[in-house]
Length: 192
Image (cartoon, rainbow, N blue to C red; front, side, top):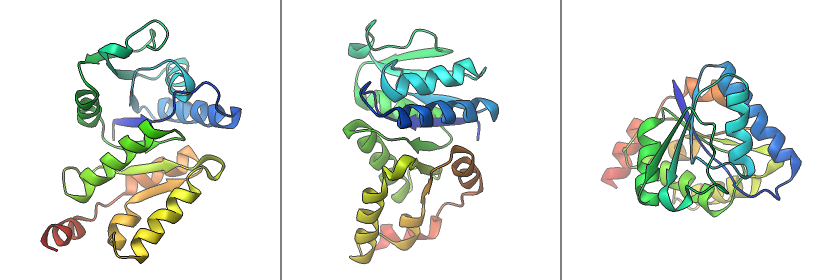
């Protein structure tokens, strides 16, 4: 892996605990020589994450929608900033640039990107690892819902296990490096 796309919240009102986790993730990515790919913003966890990677000597590629490229929203210190006309183009470009994906705490946008990435993996569009940084149990309820979907036979066990999860950046990245995609489950899902 050379690059990780991180999805996370842009709200400045989030708890300091989440900001600390974003800083820690940024430092970890930079220390491991992994380029951060993200949405290009300077607010909330997005800004904290990008700033941490840059302050630690790492590289950051931001991919932003033209309408969000404003002084209030766009990060100005990035290694590279790409502008896209639509959110769909933005997500496709972030997908193209990344070797793996991580979701930190966030809202609708974070969840949208996370589930789209998981869906693409489920249908065989990519074999890249997808992980959650579960800070302060933020994703516990979501994980319980996915376990329910598994119990009710809406997910194959291999697809449920394919969503990696840890509360520590180092351990999550280690799991992502060791990830083996459930290729047989993809084939079985496409037949059933």
